Image 1 (cartoon, helix red, strand yellow):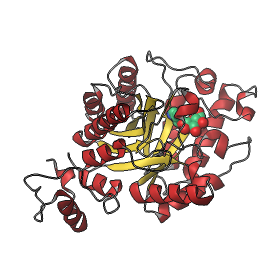
Image 2 (tube, helix red, strand yellow):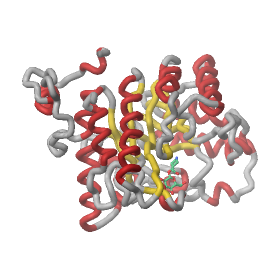
Image 3 (tube, helix red, strand yellow):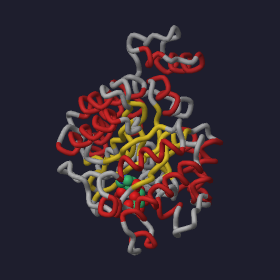
Length: 359
Ligand code: 9MR
C-alpha cells in the first residue's frame, strides 16, 4: 500500500477496524462484506481512509423547501466531503448582465459546504453553454471578448478566493475528434482563449488548483490524446494547469477499459485527476439486473481512482435519482445515481462503499 493510502486518523482507524471486524485493524479471516453500518461510516470517512475525497454536485435540490430539501441537505452534508455547485457558479448565473455580478446563490452553497466541513469545487469559468444573451447576442470583437473573459475570470475567482480548492477553468473545449470546439470564445478570441483563462485564474488566486474538465476523455482515444497533448504543451510553456477533470457521464457498462491507464498517463505529467461528474444512466424502468451492473460500473470507477496515485476525488453529478440532469436530456434513460428517487440507497451506493473500503 502506498504511503498516501495510510493516512489513518486514530478515530478513522478504529472505525474502519470495527467495520472490517478486526479489533487490531486487520480484517477478520472472513470479512462480512455487506454488513456495514452506513449511518456510522459515511462515504466521506471511508474515502479519507482510501486517500481520496468523495463529492457530489448539488444546487437545485439544495434550494428545495420542505421535507425533501432537508433530506437532500442531510445526506449531502453527511456523506460527501466536496460540493460542486451544479449550476450556480456558471456564467449566466453569476454574470447575468454586462456590468452585474450576482453571487448570492453560489455564496449560499459555499456557506452550506463550510457548515458541513465540505470543500468546494468551482464549476465552471469558461464554457460554451449557459452564456447570457448580453454576451452571445452582442456584436463584440476579439479584443472585447478577451476583456470579457479576463474580467469574468478575475472577478469570479477573486470573489471565491480562499473558499474554493479547485476550479474548472475551461470546460468542454474539445470535440470528440480532438479538435477545438467552436464556441463564443474560440470564435471570437482564437485558440489562445484557453491559456488566457488559465493565466488569468492563476493571477487572481495563486493557491487554487486549476483544472480543465471534459467528457469522453475518460478512456484513451482521440479526444483524451488531444487533451494530453494540450496539457503537456501547457506545462512545457509554463501555462498554469494543475489537473484534468474526467466528467464520467457513463452509459451502462460503458466504463472505458483504459480508464486506469488514462488516469495514470495524466498523473505521470505531474498533474492531478478528478472524476468530476460521475453518473451511470440506465434504461428506465431499471431492473435488478441493470442496477447490479450499474453498481459494478461505479465500483470500477472508484477503484480506478483509488488505485492511481494522483487521482484525488470522485464526484457524482448529484446523488439522488430525484434530481438528475439525465432523464430530461436522454429520454428513456435515468436512475443514474447511487440513491433512488425516494432517497433510499441503491446497489451503486453499496458498491461505492465497498470500493472505498478496499473491497
Ligand atoms: O446538470 C446541469 C443541468 O442542470 C444544466 O441544465 C445543464 C446545462 O447545460 O448543465 C448540467 O451540467 C453539465 C455540466 O455543467 C458540464 N458537464 C455536463 C453536465 C450535464 O449536462
